[in-house]
Image (tube, rainbow, N blue to C red; front, side):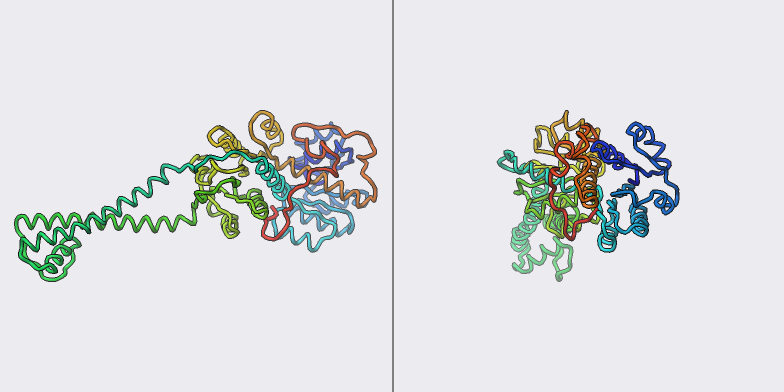
Length: 440
């Protein structure tokens, strides 16, 4: 195995617990951080140099059944994969790559390669968990609550409209007074009233004195107010149209849907997986310029732009009537905040949160009222199952784990589905294949 980041270390522990012999190649920094832990497990570790080619030659590739590339560096992993294939054309390789273009390149041009990433392994598990929440069902409120701001906007627009209407309505009575007091024809009186109201020259008008001059001044003031109201309505309409593409809300009557917080690699994949299963989804994302936002909207998925830790944003997404919620942003702190917010009595919906650290995920699972998803744990489980399959195909026999004693039961960050059932019986995940879904 090449690479010793948190995912790589979790894979090492799991393979060791499954009685699979492991040898590790890591950078000097990784070796300094993990040397003691690897020594306690009795795992042989080699320090890598700057040149991948020399290190891979030193490994004697022919004696390995599977190679696992775990470094969090797409370019480095692709280079290592090509070097390995140059010296050994048949050894199976499990390689971690996030970039969709590099994924397609490896799948099309390099044989015996299984490409994975934290996004591609975590998204199906999160989507499956959401489907379980939907299957459980929960009572929904009879009517959707409406934000105070939402109710306030129509009132303001109505008042502006009434102001314009009343101003125009005042013209006819004033024109009638002018016609009677100044002995003018109806058209001439109306022309005079409108010229004073809108401050435009509609033709010659008689000079006004006394009471009639005051009435003309009042019309002028009403004209200014009318223009202000009209400008306000136009600006409101333009801003509403402009912001509709930036901060659209979920349909008011939407219920029983899934709220996905975060439109990153994992969140976008989960939303598309659920959308393929005909599940209604609303995504919340703080960065409106994120490229995934437009792609999700093109696919007919509602995206709300806003701060996911704010109650109003969650209500815009219809969280109060959702069947489930998934907090899948790139921040454990934000996800934990959302999990606490959505699982309390105010919302009370089934919630799962993405927690990168498996230790924290296991602790929260035991002590709080929401589920957790660890990308590290999900990726390690996927790699263990992949190694089992590749070893079985290469060796043409059952794995040593089926004949060399019991599995060493693990807990915490090293616990996964492969410790609850036999590896071949690990729970299936939703199919995340297909065009349009990013691999990372």
